[in-house]
Length: 272
Length: 306
Image (cartoon, rainbow over all chains, first blue to last red; front, side, top):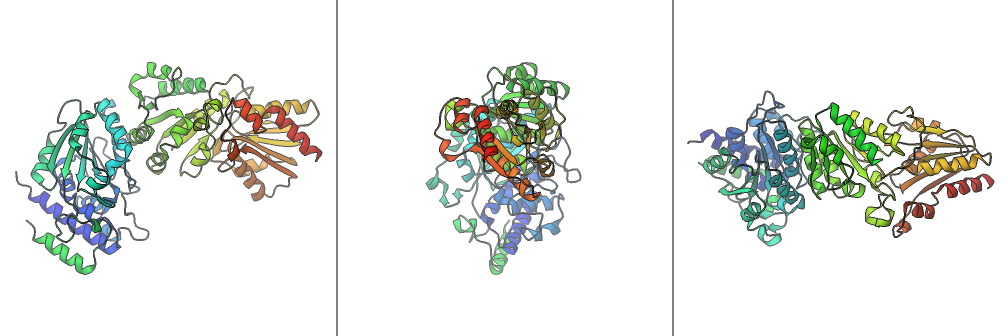
């Protein structure tokens, strides 16, 4: 299967996010770039959502729990027609609708605001429970960061989702290996992460989070096992696709200068 | 109060199949009535309040009306950020029921003394806060919380072997209820301790001292003008099993200042930092805080003679 459009979308939203964070002098570009393919596959190929009726009752629900990745999320919503592209240039500006952490207030297509870590998965559990109770077959997807898994609230939900057999719930971990102050393995090691989820009663799979085919495959046959929630642990690279941003803590905080922006966009445009 | 709560909720849930109840693994001998009648809309979420509030938010975002149940401090403090970000910011129909208000669990120790709960929630956007004083107000508060769009907190005590009101009073959210009217002093109170105020007023009536007793079943929103209108005696006393910070004492004092009410004396009976190590029955701790009927009576006599 060829995913030209998905690949193009990933490039487009990377470029939007770079421009937005540069323009607003905002942080978290590295966290945006690591999940470009994940968002692109979800919005291009997987999620059953309609931009013309964003509140359609039977839509799939997507929650970006790592709310600091807002820029690229707004970008994918703009590319898919949920919000006007003109809004993107207002990102994090005074009186903008688009705050630097995900805001759902008056923004079509966003289910829930986020920004403080560890909130998305519990909400997703509630949505999954409601869907099951109402005998609806839509699915709930929640995208988490790796550092976010330090939050105990997630582990309450991981217990809960397995206990209640929330097979309509899929968590995706953007495992870029870097959190606020350094490497995940040095700050609060998550490994063996797959085994932990499995021990809690989830189905778990580990994929290359930049390989569109692998992402698509993992998201196409859900749930992986009956009566179990699924976690897709996506190995990613922070700052992916911009050589001087890749795997670098400082791009959790820095925003690109105009020269850096030009260089970054040029690199992305050259990628296959 | 717990019995009235669950009776009222079961009636509501019978008429509306979108009403759910979540418990943080508390409510033994109380919630079974609901779980038996509506097993598909009841979940014991375990001892995990952060998840419980997130689940409540997710259910509400999916069109459900959710009540959660736990001990006050656990359901307010442990998951405060979930309440703030997930429930209040999105203005969701989640009604948080906390039992053990004030010193209901006095002998259990400070972990169970709910004396900062509504003060903590007071600044939360869109949040309504109910503090009923007896079963009659409990029913009113649950019905109002259900009928009111947006989140609410309902602070209950435990068992209640008395009623303050003879019959269902006229009540609209945000307004004080005047239970007794007198010209010498006004007691403004909220929650179960209103009953002590009522007993004090009756004792004082035997001495020809006439006291108004005002109950505040909702402390947020509050109609300050209506509150100011009932503060029409030279002595004002507020009584609450709660810190002065975020409490009704601040509301009453604000009303007095804002509406330039002419009073001789204002006394705020509330909890204090030095009471946190006190352990004992609700009556024992109330006595220490001068909130028993006898102590309230003596305070008013002293103020009148000063």
